[in-house]
Length: 82
Image 1 (tube, helix red, strand yellow):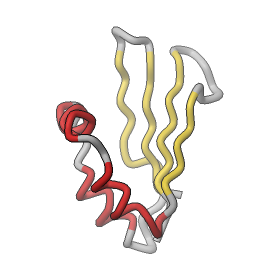
Image 2 (cartoon, one colour; image 1 turned 90 degrees about the vertical axis):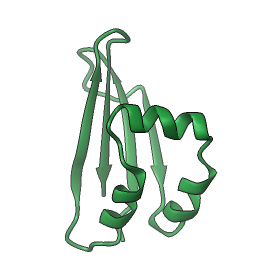
Image 3 (tube, rainbow, N blue to C red; image 1 turned 90 degrees about the horizontal axis):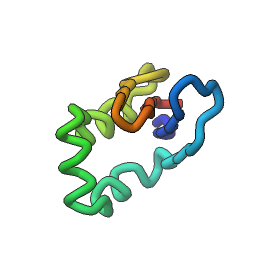
Image 4 (cartoon, rainbow, N blue to C red; image 1 turned 30 degrees about the vertical axis):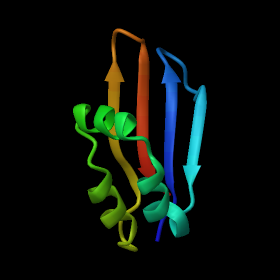
């Protein structure tokens, strides 16, 4: 099982402004602790938490799963399994 990494980059930056690591062992539990509003915002961006959890259990699944660019906020969010 891989850890989930979420990195937030400001426009044009190569180093993330924020990094969040969710250990594989608590990923399923952590997903249930996410506030409903946050989960809804993720769904609006096309992010399926249940699918990410399923992928994290696959030992062959590693690397970037999703990149979301928010042009209004000048942010890029990268979600990866590592």
